[in-house]
Length: 308
Image (cartoon, rainbow, N blue to C red; front, side):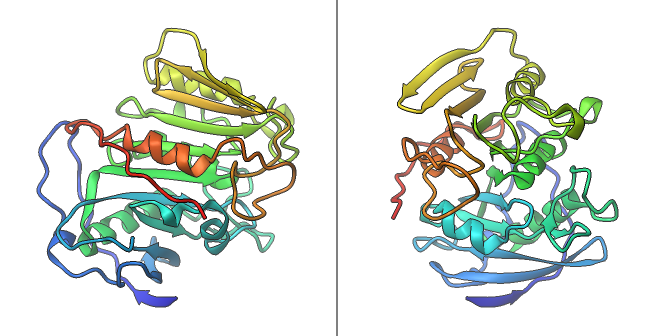
């Protein structure tokens, strides 16, 4: 793994439905060779931050690529997320961002009660996107976010705060703290969620004393934000997995019966409890992401991924 030093530049404003010029990064060589992972360093909000940047092996200069932002769980690291998710197998630029210490020597993200109030992870995400769009050929209509646990909860925050830059979100075993009227996305945000019914860390039915809503409640709230008036329907059942959706496929949920605080289909240990291999979260996330782009462009045809 190499180390890549990066500084912050000005942001790019996206106007929904408007045509955009190709990012400056489409005209330059990638900062790390295709097929490699580099450690990037950036200063955001006066704080030195890091993330792992993976450029797909078949990356070609001048050919726009989707970009996936990945957020680890509390106490985990970007390298762990990279290892057990298998997201590197996707034909996309993958970015594994690193959180900051939450006061107990564990890394975490904005939005949780234990988060550092001096840290703005939304700004960090914006700064990283600005930089990558200047260094890589990013398809700015196809930027996505996924994460696990506290990282998944923060992905929900990004859906609220960066809805004109992030096309869709996919939280896994999410710690969704109540956002109330703080969540006002500027467009309908497609959401794909995974959660185990036996998750002992973030219980499926919520914990009122921890301000954690039931997963079904959180999803229903997103469906309402996205303008959905119809109820949910079941579209998938296989062994321990049930797929539910609101408004066709705008909000989708995979309920893992007996599933723990884990990443479905994980390549290695991702958390406590049972890991289902009935479905692969990584494959389903990719299928969902490629079906949703920011307004102004049609959805792409999914490219296959190979999970080792």
